Image 1 (cartoon, rainbow, N blue to C red):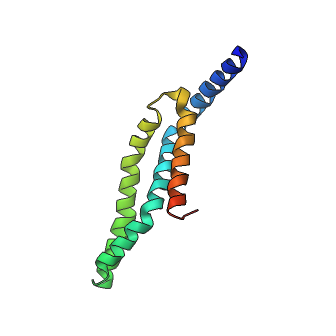
Image 2 (cartoon, rainbow, N blue to C red):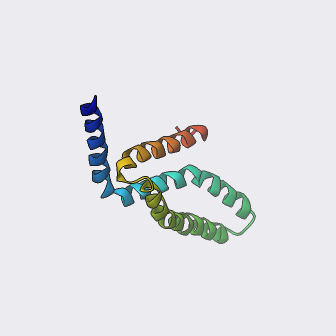
Image 3 (spheres, rainbow, N blue to C red):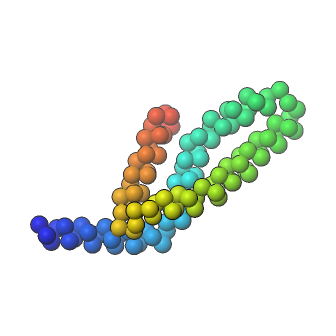
Amino acid sequence: MDSILHFLNTLQLDTGQWLLGYVNNIAMLLTVCLVSLYANDVIKLTKSTVTRYNFVIRVLCFVLITAFGFGFIVVWLSPLIAKGLLFFGKKWLTATLIVAFFILGTIADKKNQL
């Protein structure tokens, strides 16, 4: 029994150490997934808000919100998510990632995007 626990502990540490080098990329991936889950709602709200305005204003609002708004959210939120992933340490990084992707999948399922 001790050898199994030692193996699992070593596996957990090794995968956490390996994932540690990619934590910023993984955080950006999670952020983009999260933004994409709510992008349709934001675009619908923007569309309903600027429908009565001129074509140029509508296009400008769309570009500002999608390019700069979503881009800003990704750039601002990614480091925070990276810190959140490392909150429990590298030993628990793999489990934290599995939980994070499970939460995103649950949100996607509830929004009928699966």
